[in-house]
Amino acid sequence: MPPTEKHFVTSRNRVGQDYVELHRWIDDPVNKNERHDFTRIWEFGPTIRDRFGEEGVSEYIEHLREDMENKFAKLLGEPSAELLQALRYFGIRPNRAPEIKESDLNLLRRAGMAAADIAHSLKVAEKALELAKRTKQPLDLELVARGALFHDLGKARTHAMEHGMIGAEMGRELGLPPEITAIMEKHIRGGLSSQEAAELGLPIKDYTLHRLEERIVIYADRLTDIITEGLVALASEAEAEQRFEEILRDMVKYGKNRPTTERYFNYHREIQGLMAL
Image (cartoon, rainbow, N blue to C red; front, side, top):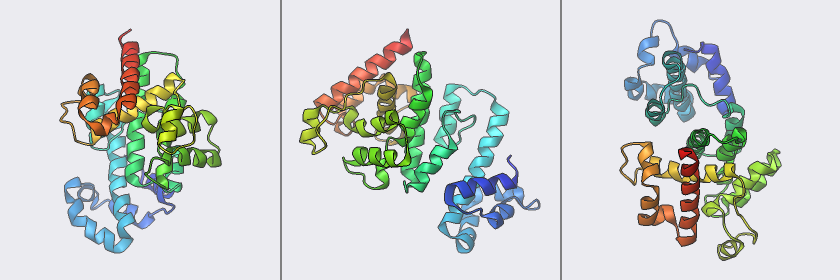
């Protein structure tokens, strides 16, 4: 497990405070085992909340998660895709893809994104990278990872349709490259036509996804929604891919309308076709 001092750094990067006293309390040699017991969070939580507030409780859980990630990374080596999916279900990400940078996650936090939106973006990035590597194409994996991580940045200000446009503006202010802000702006409904944009009250332009990296991010975004939202009973993440077209036809939430559904079908068929080569 990482040394206690490492937790000071990760807390400071996440929330701007070290929480030294909290992390030393968790790693107290006499009580360390019981304070790392997930089944006792309910017992220790009220005491931590009284001393450190709600953010302290969150940092307590992050401390336990970081320790679990470190422990599993040492034990597992290169886990199978199925085991990785099972671990991610519980928020454990051993051997996180090198393309996913903690500095980028910190940018999302400092921009004011809610924890749930950041968690979604991280899952999309992991899924997008998994898909990209399975295509065995010469792709810009950094673009895939960062485009996925930042695609919903605009939700720091609004969850309305305009969050893509607003996120792109925020991304430009942060100095993000244009190929990333393009994904942020174009991900709404999977790449709108200028006519659709006009109908939705967005700036009238062509939002077509020209790069394979862009289409992988958008496909991963829809798959992640299906996998994580619990509206569709799935035995595995692979089943979401197998039933993708059926799910979009049957559920308006995911298919939206005919033009959107057809775009997603095309991305699905293209990307799955590349995997089959």
